[in-house]
Image (cartoon, rainbow, N blue to C red; front, side, top):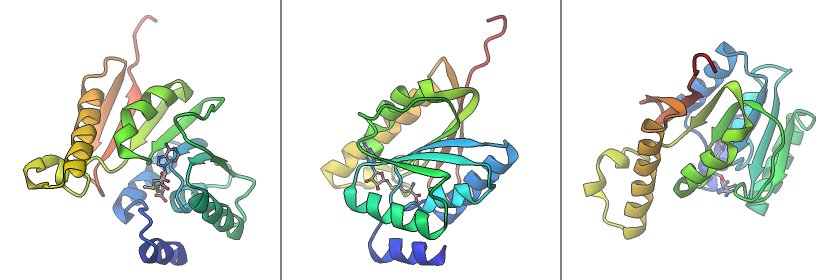
Length: 194
Ligand code: SAM
């Protein structure tokens, strides 16, 4: 796994931070998660780590960047996980995914978080969870006054909009964790008598 981390560092590929990854893997173990949908594969680092938790876990992961996609395929092959990790090449906002998942991990373009959530919530099993990473965006979401770039300001605003969207969503409940770069775990509200 060290070689993937080194590759990511050398080529500036944003992969999940150690702390966030540990949280994710523990969550998968504790909740006996068996099938996972990931939005944003990059080089396959998080997908490979998740698959290694247990050999009955199946993962579908979506990546739109052709170079990243090729790297992911190569790495997944190296770990002999081709039969358990299915990498879908394409824009997750346009891809059609069938079936229900115990866990949906959103880790792609941050400005699109609400759109990813709205599109894929239908793929979440009734007891499943949607996990979103990078909600602190390197600590900047709590200190927007420190940002001078216009684009970055707009991005941080969108991440804060997403947090608000989660907090006020009547169909889902979200817990926020100050772990790694800020993680949210969102589950369906259980409606009594329905
Ligand atoms: N989950 C990976 C990990 O921790 O190893 C890191 C993913 S990286 C933060 C985000 C990836 O999402 C990038 O490789 C980017 O190309 C991809 N991405 C961004 N927007 C996307 C979209 N709309 N559809 C598919 N992939 C997307």
